[in-house]
Image 1 (spheres, rainbow, N blue to C red):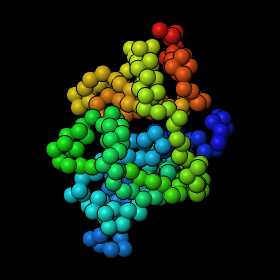
Image 2: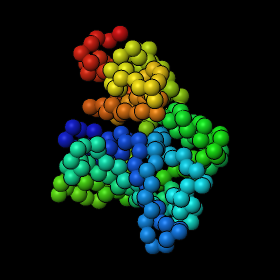
Image 3: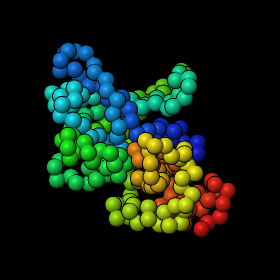
Image 4: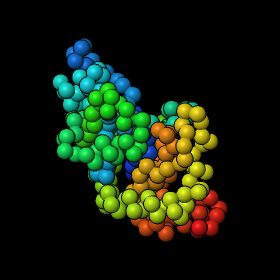
Length: 237
């Protein structure tokens, strides 16, 4: 798999990594034979698989308990949805093993408000394992894609990712806020790095998330900082 600019699947991979909510379609337990759609937030783990935090009371969770097969649909935020990118992942969504503490920790890094749902309302982490993708890059362009075309496993383990985030905050932290819109009362606090992988940087303020894709695969803090400085028209700090 290549990261070349003309790679026809890179836009689909960045859509997969750069959207933090989507519509999950499950098999209705209340109305057998009918699909049931719900909007859910999610983040990707280091294997490129979605982590969701779901309530046992939610209809989609009850549906998944009866049949874990589902679809997760993402779309690019454009006024003309017919011209936007759309990506649907078909797969199975099941509860994370209770011993998998990394799944919950990662989700809460992306969505800090999820801690209240976990601790007080007994939401639990689920992981979606893709089987197949359908990608539409705009009007009259659509094709089926295997998971190997979309899902990328980050070579950075937890320790390496944390160290890289800390280095980027030291080198460029004062300018990361330029990437996100102005703070609002609903999204207070400083801009932080929720996650980083060789193909992009996930920035957050509160639960508001934005992905900054890289032009090529990068894992060194110096290379990423230099790119951020060029992007902002500055010099490395």
